[in-house]
Length: 570
Image (cartoon, rainbow, N blue to C red; front, side, top):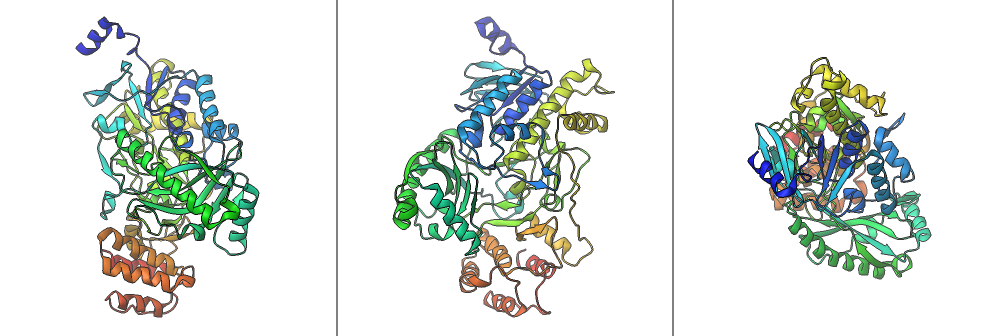
């Protein structure tokens, strides 16, 4: 308090003037939180440490949205649906148009925005965040939202987190980050045809539609990075821009353990040199498609998939995501596949199936230690495997809107009579059935979606259910995209899925001899990976690993595989 009085005497009165809500991070979810709160009548300040708004979409150039739908359409409504309309209602979009849309929504709502507002200091009093100091001076508010990708404000204020995937017990590594780069001079029509030929004729999973393209896994497989421990090249995800250029999401960066902006910028600049090598490789290997390609820039920021995971009032778990659990305090719907990026160069990506639409509880946004702060980002209260799905931008934007409306509900309730019993903190709101009902009702009035007619299938009575859930929470129970809302315990397990589980475990645990066996099996039986695993082949693999035989008939079911894997991977 003495500091605030001194600041006012020195002429900083306007800098730390009271706001109803301060949002830290002009990420997509941060913009939605700020806009929603301002639309609900609050005076909102949006602080952004970078030079622009839009976060990973406009500064990281992640120009393709990870959309999820059910029979009624997109799972996210409200402000996300409005943003989606403004950028053209396609999965891929022009990043300049997206940034213009974010700025327009902020202006229309009357949100005050400050860019390059780095955190100098935070002050906490009696479990409440009281003050945030930036180079322009301190600001205070009764409520805060941390929408930064790494939850830096909450971390600095004393909230508890797990790091990377340490909750799985495997290690504390983080999923690979990406540096997106821009290509000019690429004939989109030829690329479009080549990708659809790959997907439709060669059945590789590649394809192209509208502005989007994905594939060329075979082309990039031969790329040798300058540092194999730091970089890897995955299949190309392409987003065509209004000027005809292509944004390429393909260059993976490993070993990013910190969240320090200076170290991340150094990594970005070093990775830009690797991107130049990638473009040279593409020109050489496929001159018909990429012979005239030239790199015209890299994204201003890295695309960070994972950093911290908040110890919230409730942590969303992987099986709750996959099986489509709903919650009485759900404030948004998710449904994107449990699709995780590699943790090691050369590692098979993680795919655990496609969820039935699931609810994200309000409690997952509330830190245990701080009563007036919400965390809305991939660093919110999700277990690391649950975050494979919950981290995607459309869901985060829906959660951002919910956070802004929650702050408005608390701030305005005493005057407007919105609640029978006045609530003073997000902790109190999270524990108030009446308050949560009022929050959900207001979100529905704003066009949000909080329920779906599609439900998951729980197989708790089947052998292997308990073991499958335990494995799923560690990311060790792979399943195909078409496995939706179910563990599929009665279905055959695919050979590739069984081997992926073994590979992920032995990479994390450094079991080199066993890893070599698994990788050799993938190589030898490449043509069989997407087929059900037979008992004879399973026993060959087990014998090579020094394990005993597994009895029974053909094919091996996913329930049987869960029982076996639970024993092998404990």
